[in-house]
Image (cartoon, rainbow, N blue to C red):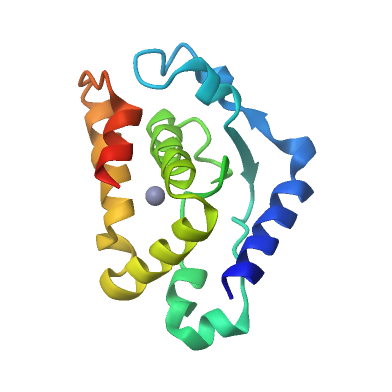
Length: 157
Ligand SMILES: [Zn+2]
């Protein structure tokens, strides 16, 4: 299952290759938070509907609620997707970039396995990887200094 999801993710990122925008465009907004090279190699795509791996096996395993729920954004590896209409919300980009860092830090297989387990155990709203992203998003909104953001994320994982 993990392999199937991983293949789907790689295919999806490839499909949107020409539409991906490098997050270096947020260099000014995020200069106190994310280093330029990290932004340079992170990407976002604005879409009308977020791509999700809608496999019957996932529905059978109890992920139907997650697959059907409408989110503002979703991250796969170094690329996140934003639902059209939300692309100007800078804190949402900040949130998804926390996920990019989580993917990097855990590695693809581990991120998928852990995220699925968390959704199963805690539900999306209380999944620790989500809570972490929401917490940093809030601190960013409050203009808090986060000098070691990437290190902090890595340490908390
Ligand atoms: Zn999130």
